[in-house]
Length: 77
Length: 344
Image (cartoon, rainbow over all chains, first blue to last red):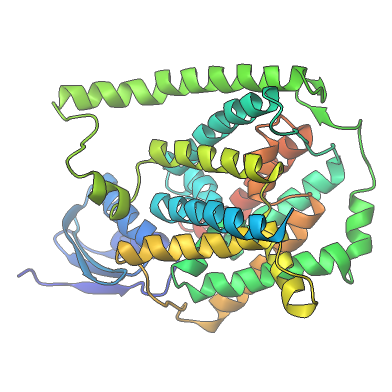
């Protein structure tokens, strides 16, 4: 298990808010921190891991937790 | 059109359209916004591919005498004002006209509110209190049916459509398709995996090129089935009239019901259906206002993103090209102010 530093709850948000919020929050986090993103919007669930990778962070897992619900873990580099 | 034909054909075509929209997450708001916001071009590429497929498809059916092409006449002020306001509205509504409609089928209540706003805005502009404003904006007309290559001509225009479409397909294959294939070859990855066809069709999001081709094909089929363009706000207005008068639902209205059903089925199979509401009430309000602006913009510009971009541009209508450009501009201005300004 990894220690989760911060949780970003984006449930109910549609694009681009999950993308905007996750981009903003990782900029404020420190190297090694782990961000948990909760999301229920399919497009962003596909996009956020890619955006995080392109920003240089490590996507630890993308887990489908239920109907249209995902949990994404990102480690800040 | 006969009622039963509209019902059956409208629901079937609408449902397939809705299914593809949901699988491909095909929304022009995301497509245009992500160009500047995420530097992400896949949905924009899907839009471009569908345009090329539509050009070729519509041209072929026009040659065969199956359909009559009917590009919008150039009304420059209506195109600029309507397009810009539509673009602004779609960012606030968090989805274009078709994107908003398919998200209703995914269970997104914010998009449902946006659709209600879209209907109200369209009705107010088409037959309600702001009909005069719309008429004034539409007053100036240049030519009769101006296309990119001069006045519309029943034989020449399809020839140009075919040429532009084929050149477009060749260029896209050369610049986008071929490098992707080469890359897959280097990785020793099979190009098409038939083994998990069912999984890829019903469970996963579609790759951009599949989405683009399928959207082009289904909209060509929609044009052939009704000999006319699909209009999303028109469909919502149709449903409004069905509720408030004794008129029966017509073609456009059945398309809307079809999209919602198709998108629901697609989302349900993939485990992506859920009733969802934005957490704060202000977002709902914003989506409602955004929908209303889209309704005004679409009626003023004589078409939403589907009518103007995905049907008018393939017919090379100058009006639709200008409208499309201003939809993109409106989208970029608001997306920049809301999501990028003072934040980078």
